[in-house]
Image (cartoon, rainbow, N blue to C red; front, side, top):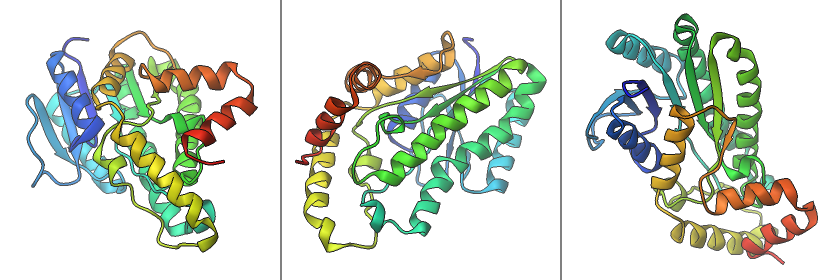
Length: 267
């Protein structure tokens, strides 16, 4: 698949940008989506397409444009995402809806836009960027974790449905990565004083983990492998993500929960 047609969502920075660049270096034709091309730094070998994953119309128009240019789409990488930090009780339904509109419904929109073309081709790969929080929930990131759990369920169900057409769906589950999204994670608007102490501790732990996390290149390499290599459902980048996946699978729940709380600075 050296000349594969690749679409990567959310390439303005971070994991998406690194991923698009790696595909281009592999000789693929790469389309990278951004909400606004104006102000986005160009990427060598990447054709930028304006698209907002929160808009049905924007998504449909973007994929029509890509198919008109390239004639096919071999791989869709759903990388665009959002996050929020705060206690579940502090998170408004509006904040939760905005988060799910990007993290889950954005994937639904892009999948529904690309699948008609992939069904005609009788081939294709959809790679959805999840998180270790998609299988290991963390305190004060409850709605983000919930959105990634939903992405995992959607992805597995979708894979069952579309494999009859030669299409497969995979998940990539990174841990903390040094990106602007994580460094500048928004917090809930409402504050309940009873949570302040623990939330402060957990927020500092999150920032420390992000500051000390690896750059996006490792996650990007995992995404490229998930897209172009032999199919499997779950891919975890080397390091912490891979270790957490093994711990979740093989260790008793008690020690895993204890270790998680310790990593967030909680008693």
